[in-house]
Length: 170
Image (cartoon, rainbow, N blue to C red; front, top):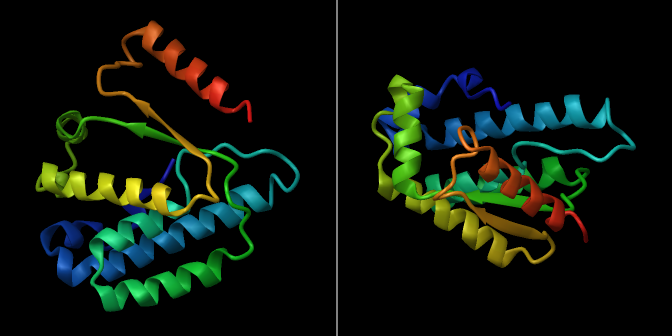
């Protein structure tokens, strides 16, 4: 699982996005690169890897959160650091209604997330969709979870697993 709490800028970011966006995104990216290098490349050199996030998440969030000048710098660093990473064979995008995401954020009860609003979530969602539409080298498919409760309903979980298994047949 991603260690969001290891990002020392995350709380400041939600207080002042413009001021702390670059530091926050750069910190997340460095944490993710470290995780990929440590967990995936050293232990799994010849195996398939399944992850709960993609390194491209950093690029997607950075494009939404950074000003143009900072994004150009971030993108340059991003491309340099990931050039040895094998692109994923498949990304499964788990889509959720923004109103449901807000409910889940409230359940987590992290004080620094209290100011997240639907407009910000929509911006991030659009960032993901733009990324997928503009990077045809990455195969992805979307599963809409808006009316699913895979924690409480076994049938919903089974449907998600069946959908993923069908998508892995490529």
